[in-house]
Length: 215
Image (cartoon, rainbow, N blue to C red; front, top):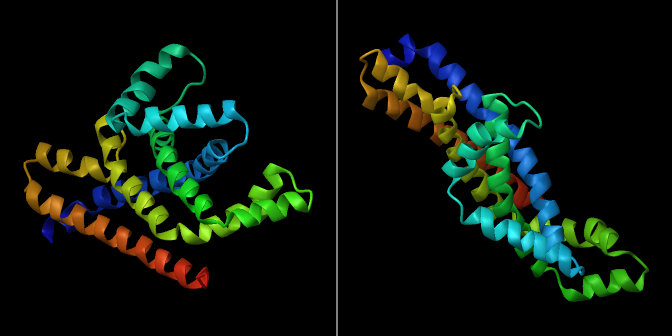
């Protein structure tokens, strides 16, 4: 308990940064992941191929390498200057969106084909049928795997500590430099992540009850 009290500003700021990373990367991953899923189910072969290529490459690339690219290689492209925090958000979003895509695509596949056929019969375009009919039904069925993917994103934020982002994963190194008990520090960090995961789990249960679909 003494470590938590003595280093409270470190724990507080670290977890606040972790939450910020999670929220920014989570929103970006959801938006881009849904867009990729639309490419994956598009009737246009080129779009399907592009979505498939992205998902295949990113899902089989270690997240650390994605961080290395955006933190160290990307600045040499001299496009848009990014801080370490922004680079971490982009890396996490770039990586997680591939998994979000597959979750959403699996949900789209659970929607009966008759729904899409009925939408076409009403004169809706592919984009309209996805946005107004298919995706609303698909999102209801993918709440558990979607939250599981977001929980993985939350834990992946600790990698940012190795790239100059002062989030919860950096607490151990600070305690080590000060000669403090790292094990106790890691236990408090673990407890912090357990609490955050429990919050996400409660959100999942709430959404499942609200969006429950009779089958």
